Amino acid sequence: MAAAPQPLTSLALGTTATVTEIKLPPAHRPRLMEMGLLVGTPVELVRFAPLGDPVEIKVRGYNLTLRKHEAEQILVTATAATHAS
Image 1 (cartoon, rainbow, N blue to C red):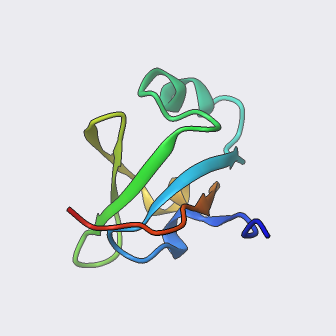
Image 2: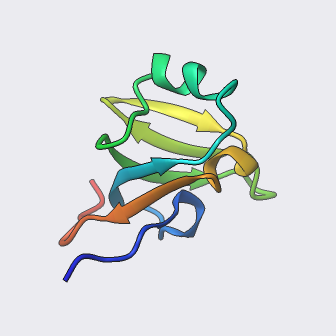
């Protein structure tokens, strides 16, 4: 049974997930696409800044920092059996 999509910000640190939907306004999507964040892309939640904003993720082999309000609009499905490295 597949897990329901959830906001990227709801993942536990070190969890790997797959992007299922990007709900940002169309004007903001090209910037994320240029950085390699597309539907179907695996991502890992690396850390939150001390006050919770911004959020750092690992995508396509590099770390990307997103504002919390952006990360909340990126829906993901957690991958089974994840390990922090």
